[in-house]
Length: 428
Figure 1: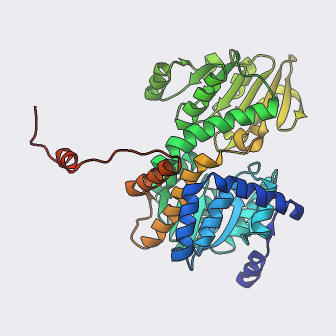
Figure 2 (figure 1 turned 90 degrees about the vertical axis):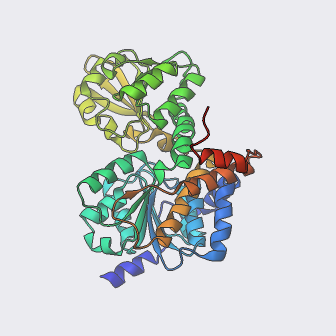
């Protein structure tokens, strides 16, 4: 069996259409132009080969930016296998290019059903990876629940989403983690920029591409005011929307108020909103009774990792019909004739109907990912089986190089200032 699955993974992967390869290569190269930090890491990796001898299983959004990350991992000497971390986040031309041009077996087709999604994940796991990289913790979950024979071979894993970190910390609490996980999402160069500026812009982009609605003057309800939520809220306001924020965390709610947003419950906002977007990482944030209160024509979407943020089963039960009216737009007609429009099947709208985060911001996130992989290898056998933060030096290195590539300079502490900050005896 092991021999057969190994042969399977020597194939080119499983993707939609080989004729898309050239388009994918051109788009990957276009994204690469805006990823100078990752390019610098790739150049070093090509010389030093810090990942040589390791097999990497990656469950990520298959985009042009991700393509440049996995190319960097391969340049570092790793044997890389890639599958999608969401059924609607794959760019089919990228999957073809990675498999056929860059020699990275990619198992991903946009719109794949659940059975195919997990079949593709199994194809990556059949390569028996000893390093994994997740976007939502599905790969780790599969190893720990369905493929426990692989756990002893994994020396470390990287996780880059808030949702994934939530799941992994729950695993750590339940003491079922069998290997160390690096919380890439917790790195400053990831969540402060990717989550805020990347999610903010790409979510607006996804909503507008799917619907072509004007946001100016509309009531936009934002559920969740973490870094993703505040990024989207600020961009929606910039487009002229009246933004309403819903939160369960009182500190974040005060932040939203002091940032100039109206804060209320989703129960109250349900009847006020024209456009709704959830960005929480939680379940049934918009529930059946919220859908029942919505006005005719309300648009509902999610930009959190999983589609469970919207209770779509509950919506289906109170609807008398459902039909697709545009790409990534489904119209639910309620029994009284009101219509509610759900975007992207409730999956990440910024990747379902748009292209995800711009390459410039993913340059920092994926630089951290690549360096986290190197960190895991260098610390093989030294890290406990729990969720770990990356050393701040990695953040600082990425930020410094990013500033340089953007043409900015910053001050350096003088020796006197360093001594002052390290002392306690100089007072008033």
